[in-house]
Amino acid sequence: MGVILVILMGFTGITLSELPPPIDLSVTKIARNATHANIMEVPAGSKFYYNISVTNPSGYNAPDVVVTDKLPYDVIYGSAKAQAKNGAILTNVTIHKTGDLLYASFPQIHKLRTFYINITVYAPTDAPTTLYNILNVRYANDPDPDNNTFTLATYVPLAGYDKPAAVESFEGLLHSQTRLLFDFEDLLHVTPRNYQENYTFIASFEQLLRAQANLSLSFEDLLENEDNTGWDLANFTVTERAFFLKSFRRIIWEQAFLFASFEMKLKDAWISLDGHKVSGHSQDMQTEFIASFEDLLKEQVKLFDSYQLLMKTIGGITPDEKVDAFAAFENLLRVEANLLMSFEDLLKAKYKGEKFDTWNPAPPMQPVTETPTIPEVQEIPVNETQALPVNATV
Image (cartoon, rainbow, N blue to C red; front, side):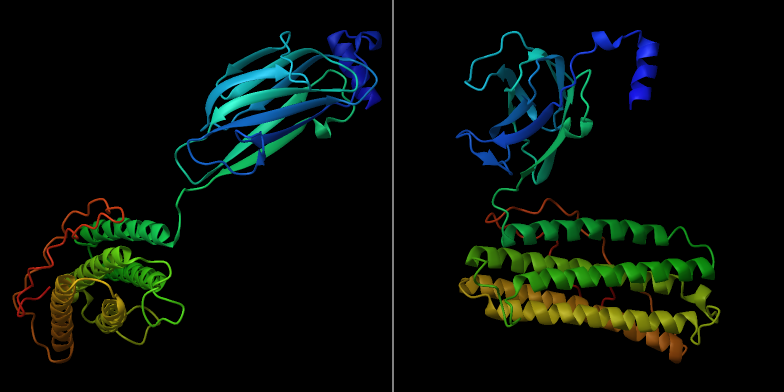
C-alpha cells in the first residue's frame, strides 16, 4: 500500500505533508416515514425521507469530504439539506443534484462528530417495486475504503394486493398469452411449406396449448378451497365469485377456440402429413396428432368439470344470474360438442378413408378488452348468448 501511495504521489506531485490526516470515515443510510420511524417499505406515491450519516471517529478533522448518493431512478426528488446532530442546518455544505446523483460537499467533518444529510423524496406510484440506493463518501486519505459505501433497499408494496387481486392479475396474463397464441396460430397458415415444417410447427403449437391448459387449471385452483370442494369462501365475496366465474368461463371459451385452431391447422396440413413418420417414431404423423388432439380435449373436459363445481357452489347470486350461468355453460357444451365432432372427422379420415366434409373455420375471436376491475363486473366480450349451430364444425 505504501509503494502504491508513493507512486500516486509521484504522478500527482502531492507530498506526504500535503495529504490530510488518515481518517477512517464511514457512511450509513436509513429510510424514515413522516413520524421519523425507520422503515423497510413505503406506500406507493407517499412522501418519505432518506437519512444519511457521515461519521468521523478520529481525533482529527477531515477536510474536503464529498458524499455521493445515487438515488433510485423512479423516486421523485423533493429537497435535501445537511444538518448537525442537534438539527442545525449546515449552511457551508454545498448540495447539488445531477440526474439521479446527489452530491454533498463538506468543507470539513469535525473530529468525533457525525453529520447528516436528510433527503425528501416521493415513492413511485407503480408498484410493486424495490428502490435501490447506493451511497459513497470520498476522502483523500481514508485507510479503510470498505465502509465508504452503503446500499439501501426499500420495498414499495402493491396496496390492497390480496388473493382476489392476485387472481385478477393472473387472469390478465392468461388473456395476454391467449392473444399471443392466436398470433402464432395465424402464422401457422402461411409459414410451413412442407410436411417437415408442418409437423414441427403443429407440434410446437400443441406444446403451447398444453402449457396454456395447465395455466387455466391453475387459475381455477386459485378459486377453490383447500379441500377442492368448492369456492374459497374466506377470500372471495359474492360479487367476486360472480366476477371470476365469468372470467373462468371466458378462459374456457378462449381455450376452446385455440383447440379448434389446432384442429383447423391439422386438417389444413392433413394431406402433406400423410404417410410420413418422424425418424425413430413408431407412429405416423397423422396418428400422433390425432392422439394429441384427443389429449387436449381431455384437458378441456377437466376445465368443464371445474367450472361446473364452481357454478354449483357459488352461492349468494340471484336466480337470474344462475340462469345466465347455466345458459352460458350450455353454450360452452355446444362448442365442446363441435370439437368432438371435429375429432370424429379426423378419426374417419384416418381409419375409414373418408374425406373431410365442407367445413367452416372457427369464427375469429372477438378483441380482448381490458379486464374490468372488481366489483365492476362486465359481460365478457365473446358473444356467449348465441350458440353455434349443432351441426357446425368449429
